[in-house]
Image 1 (cartoon, rainbow, N blue to C red):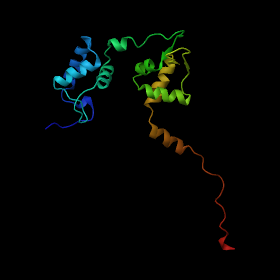
Image 2 (cartoon, rainbow, N blue to C red; image 1 turned 30 degrees about the horizontal axis):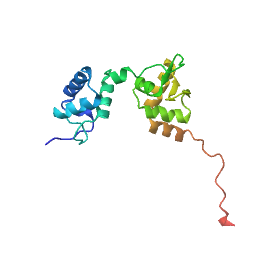
Image 3 (spheres, rainbow, N blue to C red; image 1 turned 180 degrees about the vertical axis):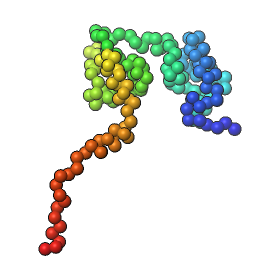
Image 4 (cartoon, rainbow, N blue to C red; image 1 turned 135 degrees about the vertical axis):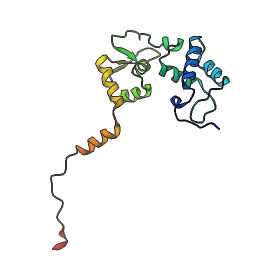
Length: 168
């Protein structure tokens, strides 16, 4: 009987899995080929899934900091880019956070960004070292603590409650 776990790190063979995935990536295999090879060798992902997929392998290798052909091409300079400008995905990778988080912040106006004028019309985000630090802190903040602080900071109403007219 195999007991399911929630995260890769909880697998009993996690160190062996990491080493094997790194070795296969170093051999130049694609993510799909690495997933197929690991599945054939009997490795299983967490959460009661039957097999690894290309996206799961990509996420594992990114967490391990493994540079593949795919990731080595990612930090290409954008046309006309200035110092401290990043593609949205490249910045997310550098900050170790999901790119959809940065995209949501971009839509809220929390990032300084511009759109490339020509296809593929990528978002170009400005982020020097200080801005990257701010974004990391923003990503690590506790939303529940923030909500509690906002709630506690609300001013109390200075006016007394309305008079009860029932006594007249």
